[in-house]
Image (cartoon, rainbow, N blue to C red):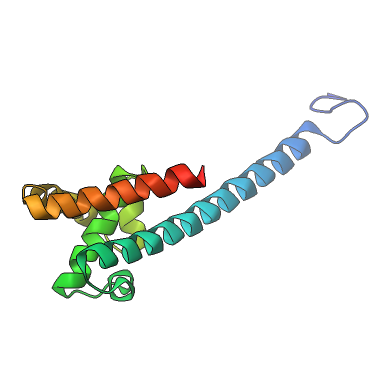
Length: 138
């Protein structure tokens, strides 16, 4: 059993693997924190853009206020984060304090409102602005 599990001239393999596992876990946690901060920043931008285009208060929407205008802005934030930036509905909901099911309903409400020509035009304009800003940032 002598030498079993040892890397020649170094620490036992279990120690190396345990250290590696701890490092990978720390990296994964750091990535989660960076992703969460990035998602929060994205939602702040989307709240401001949605409130500017459709009316409402971005700060109230981000705070979870339940008035109609704040709910509408929050629905737009979730919809745009999901459709334009690829966040899952769960991720978008987490950032806004909504469940995955509530985020799904928000997306469905916006999709249903797209039947209204004026609403659809305003949303198209906002999406084009987002596309332009993403191209310029790249």
